[in-house]
Length: 162
Image (cartoon, rainbow, N blue to C red):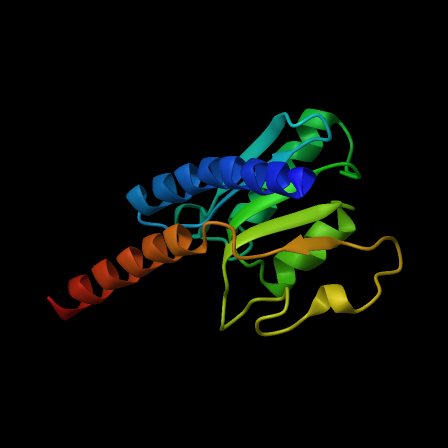
C-alpha cells in the first residue's frame, strides 16, 4: 500500500510538470497537451508540448517532441527505463512511437475519446508488441488536463463565432 501511494504521489507530481507544458502550449494557441520523460532515477530528462500549428507539422505532438528530445539528451533512442507522462491519452501515432522508443511506462491524464490508443478508442497496449510490453496508467490529474482542453476549444469556438 505504501509503495502504491508513493507511486501515485510521484505520478501526480510529474503530471503537474506536464500540465505546466500543456499550459504553455495553450498560451501559444496550440492544443494544450504537455509531456515529460523521467528516467529510472526520477530525473526529468525531457519535456515537450504540442507545436503542430507553429511547425505546420501534424506529427509535432507533445509526446513525439518529448521523445526526440529525450533520445538526444540520453544519446540513445532506446528509452528502456523511462516513463512518459502526458496530459492526454496518446493517439495511435504517438503510442507507436512510444513503443518503438521502448519506453517502459506511460502515464496520462485525460482520456481521448476520439483518438486515444490506450484503451479509450483503441487499445494498442493490449496487443503484444514484438519488442517489449508497455505499462499504462491513465486518469492521473485527468480533470486538470481536461479543463485545459475545454478552455482551448471554448476559446476557439468563441473566436470562430466572431
